[in-house]
Length: 98
Image (cartoon, rainbow, N blue to C red):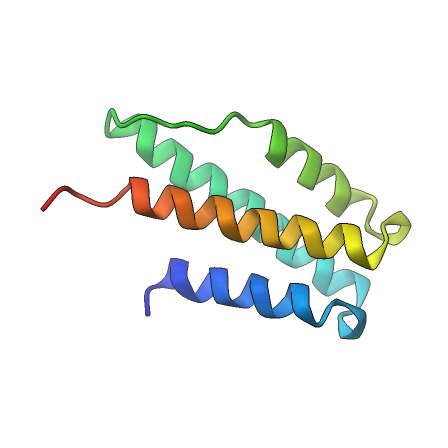
């Protein structure tokens, strides 16, 4: 598996076991996801490919990470799944044509 695939798997697993995760781990995962998503989007722009996402979702998720102690388990879980989906899509878009 690639690093990106491993990250996606990690986010999905974390989202499914969110009650067991401490606040600090939740924050760390969300921050990693926002960073990875931004990097993949930047790579798309750099290579001249279409980047269909705006940064609004990343800003919202970053806000969730900063206020993690006030967020419900469901909110954090949904944010992790949203990041996993976004990173997956960006990874697919970054593939070179065959």
